[in-house]
Length: 447
Image 1 (cartoon, rainbow, N blue to C red):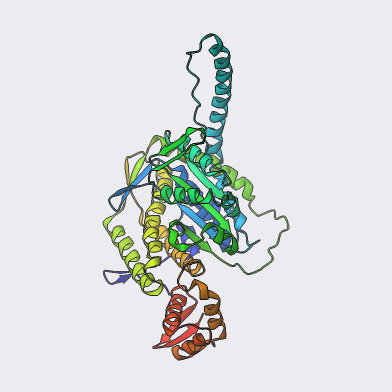
Image 2 (cartoon, rainbow, N blue to C red):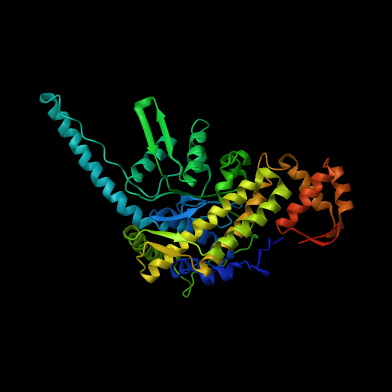
């Protein structure tokens, strides 16, 4: 079921993927159009926006009376060999900016090593000479398989100069393989970084201490449903609700793999876009700005989230409402990213910018798509509503005819040890997620 926004007697229209692509800033549209399947197009769009959200560290906005940064978290859940790897083309957008800082860091590290050698020689005759200070090692792309201490070190080194920080990995296992002792620290760090909350961390070993007052980490991860449970052991710890979600099961269709003279070379397209993204980053590094929304855009955001919140609370319970609340912030973050692209197109160097209506419509529609996907996945997470009986619920749906009434559903549910209340909640969630529609009082039809 589509949640309709009604303001001033008019229903807001959510954009379909084709309409979203048409309204994108030119660099984003060019990257998306290099792909052919809708799944890959949406995936590349979301991953590109996530990377850009990590790059634009000097963009600001006010949301709920607090300063917000554009950094986004993206989670893609899809079967193996479904095309999830296309997400990594988004990572290529940051390659030039990453190389800029990596080359600089390598040179400073070499100078530091020489300084250490000189210090070791000098201290024999001059014991009071101070040791050289380790220069920060700044990199944009942080390896997902890094230890918690190493991730925190990267964030700390990047913080002072507002260096972008991005974790992108096509296999969720890369970040969860750190082990039981590491993962709770990483999970807490991610939860704080999404909201740009201060992170402090210390270890006895080596007198390690990190304090990051305003982390701005962007994260994009993809994996199968089985891999997801290693990342999100419970929907209740709050990490899951911080992710913008894509969830899809593309049909097993063979795609023509022969070389095509008229087809775009995806690698070449993204090599060009990486250079252009470097220029966009330089523009915003020189000309930071604050995003402002028009009053009617705030009205639409509030109405959209309020109606989704009511629907989710009545269908899934209060435990799932954090998903809606954080998607409201995601909408604002997406608007910041899209506005940054527009400012580069217009060569705008002002300190404040308003969001275009087209960009707001794109952000709203992407969040609407994410909310629906997030709730579908939420149903399958441990500690989600009816998680223990998800298989039973699916069995009920399988056994019901194409058209059925509530009484039939309750009777079949009882055969699977489900209460009438549980069946009612399940039917409502199926309607919300577009798998069922109500065709009359107590009458339903599968979609």
